[in-house]
Image (cartoon, rainbow, N blue to C red):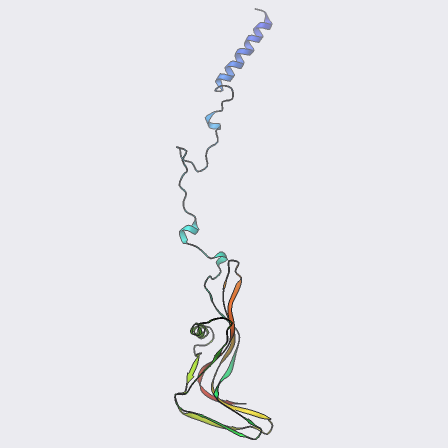
Length: 199
């Protein structure tokens, strides 16, 4: 056999051996096959543990308080008078007012939508003063008089009590932690014992 033929047969045999040794032309080793993510030995998905949010229950976005509530501003101590027990007079006039035991008067609340005044009062008691109430009742009979000074053109004398005036809002936070107002208004509510004031 000549040398050219020998070289051709040897090359053909070597090519065939390499192809068979590699599992055949175009066949990859099992180790080269991509594995399925989160798959067990049988190829089925492996059960995953629940996320923290599923374990702990739903959480409000960004941790903002989800419950609606009241907020207060411009809180001032003030005299809360009884309109039915307020008298007016000109300079030099003596004014007098009296009230019997058991007389009741109320404060004032304004709002833009229907409101549970008891909820507002309870929140104001907690946030501003525990003495705040919607109404006050005298436990004794009392009265007083006062003369409008010559330096004043006119004046007034009234029964009431010291209390508070303030602005209020009722609302809640949305998912972006923005305060959304659903109701608002003003209030002027009695707080302390019956009191007679003038000006």
